[in-house]
Length: 356
Ligand code: DAH
Image 1: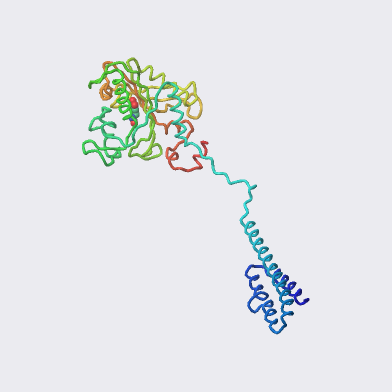
Image 2: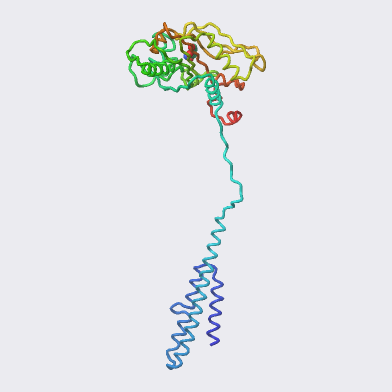
């Protein structure tokens, strides 16, 4: 009997020594396998009497069960240990602070565009968006730009597929085509509202057109102050009773608000654009700060040419308009003192982060 008890104790000790499930299964064979100790004991009973077999058999069974129990316990222990090890290896330290992503922010030119929209919006101007791939008609012809105008040359304009030989498509060279697109829509809507459906120039009652149209524009040009892609913002004000005085007032107010400079001075310098007559460049002058005293060109402007008024579907005898086109990129350079336009489009975060 002590032999049997010893056997259980030996089995427990051997199982305890097994440190992996594989070791344990090997150790099992020594006790419970086909030629293991328990099987041997059973075989040894062959020569015994029936009575002896009964009592010894029962004892061997108890031992066998005890060994099996020990084996299972050790199996669970090893499985638990393995699970614990795995959990520890994969542990997440939830108390550790996460790595923050850079917050990002608006591009300086986008900041400018938002300012322009907010300021003109506060003065009752709508904001219109239009296509960057434009037709020859809207970009040039409707804007009274003659066939032989240099702006129409391949050296200045990106022509793209689509359209016809006589009316090619192009990447808009300015936002001025939006003058026509927006006005035509506006006139159409109010013609319907006024019940005037016949074709011909409209001379009925209509709310004033007051709109700005910011967006991307394209020209074959590239240096420190020119980029093949740049931004413009068009402005258009058409009514029965608008004048240069109104344009001057509105644009002065805009510039002073935009640059947060109440003593900023504007100058309208005579110029030429096919779609305005008379035309003027608008220059501004700061009275203080690093740019003080210099005249800085910020926009083109003028009274909308009667031919353009006609192309809007309006009767030039009744309606008069003023337009301007400015460069948000240049406004951004002036506002922040940036001297190379290309910095805006290189995408270098060391530059861009300075505006956040
Ligand atoms: N479209 C002109 C340009 O790109 C700018 C311009 C000048 C726009 C006079 C206007 C304007 O609306 O009246 O150079």
